[in-house]
View 1 (cartoon, rainbow, N blue to C red):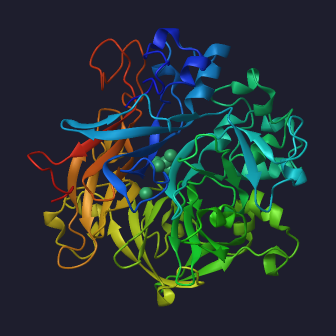
View 2 (view 1 turned 90 degrees about the vertical axis):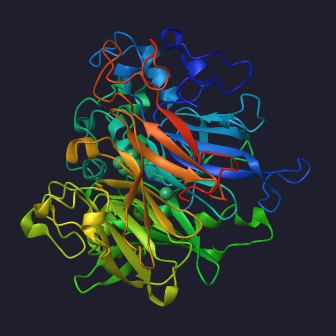
View 3 (view 1 turned 180 degrees about the horizontal axis):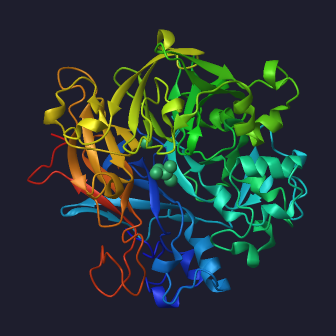
Amino acid sequence: IAWGDPLFTDAPAFNHATLTPEIQRRQFGYNCDFLAYFPLPSNPFVSSYSTRFADPNRGLLAVNHEYTIGALMFAGYDRDNPTLNEVDVEIAAHGMSVVGIYRTASGWRYSRSSNFNRRIHGETEMHITGPAAGDALLQVSHDSTGTRVRGMLNNCGGGKTPWGTVLTCEENFHQYFGNRSALAADSDTAVSHARYGLPGGESGRKWERFHRRFDVGREPNEAFRFGYVVEIDPYDPGFTPRKRTALGRFRHEAAVPTISRGGQIVVYTGDDARFEYVYKFVTDGAFDYYNRANNTDLLDAGTLFVAKFNDDGAGEWIPLTPGHGALSGWTAAEIAVKTRQAADMVGATPMDRPEDIEVNPVNGRVYVALTNNTRRTAEQVDAANPRARNSFGHILEIVESNDNHAGDSFDWEIFMLCGDPSDVEAGTYFAGFDASAVSPISNPDNLLFDSVGNLWIATDGQPRTLSGNDGIYACPTYGGDRGYVRQFLSGVTGSEIASLEMTPNDGALFASIQHPGEGSSMSDPSSHWPDFNLNPPRPGVVAVVKAGRGGGYIGS
Ligand code: FEO
Ligand code: CA
Ligand code: CA
Ligand code: CA
């Protein structure tokens, strides 16, 4: 499935020349990112949310649409003068698609007629929940309650909850809000917006020319309503998405839940920018295995922690607790909205761009992808971010103390220092494995574990660092092959592999091919994938199965 494919039986086929926002809202969005597979039961009379009777040959795919590239969407696009139609198509091309998929003899296909198919976009109504809901910080002229917001933007990575919902993460939301400099520079609002990187002048996409909510000078608080983890139920096409403010506001890359020994849900999440932090959220309540409805508000109450990596291999999870210590003057709502500033106060460790985080299903260890940070100087190097001008990135491995994901201490070590092992200056490391036997790899971004604990890694940035396309790699995490990373597939010119996912039986792998042809334009595209005709390149999701009769699990 690729950008513009119709998601409903009455939706028009892709035609970039006649796109309107109404059409785009009925078609697959742009720049697919996070992928989450959800099983469907083989018996249609069993409740949809039931993995016990899962049909191995059909399910749902929830797909983020992170952002848009006007130059590859519209003929004659002028980035200095976008039209209203172009802007509104772009807003409609953001968000998420939920789409039914099924396996055929020749591979996986999407269904245009599944009752679950849905488009969520930049104008979809959402609820704001948790400690910041209703706070004055979140009130704007079009929502005096501070509890309802139009749309989600720049949804990059995500995660799946044990109760079968998807967590989708607003990452680079700051790009969409222009004219910060219209505010008094020393006002609390302007200081916070500057800490989050909102542009002083016009935004790159210039939506604020057409929609006042994107103009910080006119709606100073609207940007406080973006930058959250959003929960969506893919089994309920009428579900109103919820922005869960308890998990904090920053450039969330992903949000990956696990269940602690005590039954609490622990969500690991990183802030993907240079020198930003790694966080985890621990719910107050416990997961209810037996009654799905009891988990509906679980993510609205709990404690947000930020990580401090000590040079001796130990680490601390520092709670961002309102009214305590360095945060004595802070309310819970302020911590939820101005999370970066709260974390600045407590001594968290600035990292080399925390991207995805995953929990190993075999040994419970936690893996953090740090994609790069070329601005770290020699003076800023520490044990957890050991390279100056880190262009290749690395992966950390965290062991929670007493295997307790809800606790406040951990041990950590470097699992992988990426790069080309033949590049001696790069100083690569692959968990102790013989570096001469591994595939060169750089810029780890999205992570996935298969059911036997192999770490699968998708990359973002290799054309700039290893002069090859981005790809997907697999790496055992225990036993004699620990650290033996090998390339599994290669992406498309100009693309990153933004996400990867497998079916529960490891029988199929799905990969998001994001921004094929990046850096070129409609008139001279550097890629014609996947149509290889006069269409522009289209971001899309591919499915990989093992060739031959009977297939087999991915990696076998
Ligand atoms: Fe959208 Fe952090 O990659
Ligand atoms: Ca990413
Ligand atoms: Ca992941
Ligand atoms: Ca990335």
